[in-house]
Image (cartoon, rainbow, N blue to C red):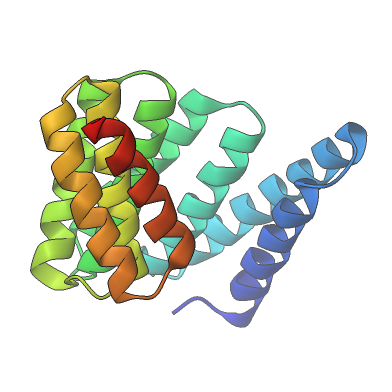
Length: 189
């Protein structure tokens, strides 16, 4: 568990990142830069406190900011570090979450086979430790469905979109159900 100062830095940095979404360009850069500094400090604090799960979480938040700043390679390195930290713990759901984000970055950078490996691992972990009643699980299936479409595997994409729909319906996430319905309709036309 990180100390109060590291927790506050993470909360504050994440609020700055969220505020950057609607900020004018010059303010956006300033907010993201401050978030980057805060998260770097929080990650160092968590590392020094020998808190691997908290350290991985701070690194994960920092990786998101690095993506926002256009630093994909830095974000990749951070997510890989977070994943390695979590492999040494028994926090399987945090591991699945970070692996899924690593897959997102690979997909964003058109490294589809790397994204496939990450999404497959994340889904395997979610199926073993989380089940079909969570938003994270539904989001992971959705990511794989989108990837299979990008890879041109319509049959697999359709099956995954159907599973995505069921997962979002189970947690009453209407926008997810609607997106899945639209994708299923497009793939069955």
